[in-house]
Length: 438
Image 1 (cartoon, rainbow, N blue to C red):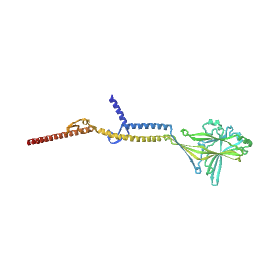
Image 2 (cartoon, rainbow, N blue to C red):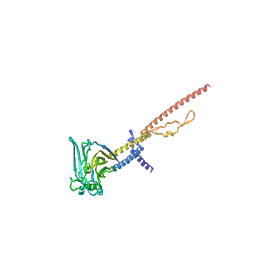
Image 3 (cartoon, helix red, strand yellow):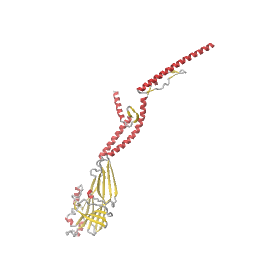
Image 4 (spheres, rainbow, N blue to C red):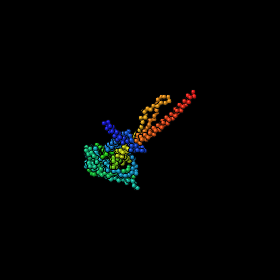
């Protein structure tokens, strides 16, 4: 029974030793193997692979769940003198609505048109050889019910934003500024109804009295980059700017500056889908001024291009990052294991070779061969420990050496015996001669 368990234990240890990848290279084959493998090296190898497997499993879960995201943003100020390209914010999710706050009257209602006139223009100023060429292209205004692309329609109805007016077209553009060769802005003007427009306008006093209690509201759809959203990373929200527009003898002008933003996202961990690129606009800043009331305008709203642009970058943990991390931790663990196991394997290789090549001759080590010295004392001869090879060939060689050595010893003993007998006879003759002389 003990032999059975011993055999199983030996088989398991042999299997563990087969895992050793840190074995010391040898010039000759050792037991049919090119490397000297040990149980310690096999155990360390198994431990290293278990650590790598655990780490790889963790990184794989992180990759599929997109838990590790590298995010960065940079703000760049571009030169509007050289970059005169058109920017169309309405095509990238931006929209605006204008109306009186908490008022059921729309700017397009007949009662309102008898008091005010609301118009939207695409203003352009282009520097030519003879001077500035300024044009104003009027844009159609409609109710915002179907032209205000905000996802929460319940919110729009609750705050009566659907009753405001919006620009119907989306191809209006903004570019440059007042000091560039090309300048394009979006203008919205609110003016008092005049007889030149229609003949049924209310009295000027009644119009001023009505607007005195109203808040002009500008509602805009702003966009932002949602870091944790991968299906729809560009989200929208409402920005509500409202202010009292009327002050006796003044009109209000408000300038909104739209900033262009660019999203550059690598959301595919397999690197097959490539990068996603999106553009969106946000209101960067706002400036309001009051001027003397001269032309009959109550308020004027302008949208300009902001020179600053922001770039958002997002990279998820990809399959290539997974391989790089696993390769790095494997190199580190392999180097440490190589130092530890390599030192141990070098010592064990020498020990194993010595143990396989040489053994002690215990028979001669513990065998006593007493002999008498000149003083009559007994001593154990200083018999050298013989080393014999463990293999069959070595044992045969050792037997031949022992036989020759024994033959030589017998020859020497016989010669010593003959020499001793001759010397003894000479001493007897000498003693006999001395006795005769006396």
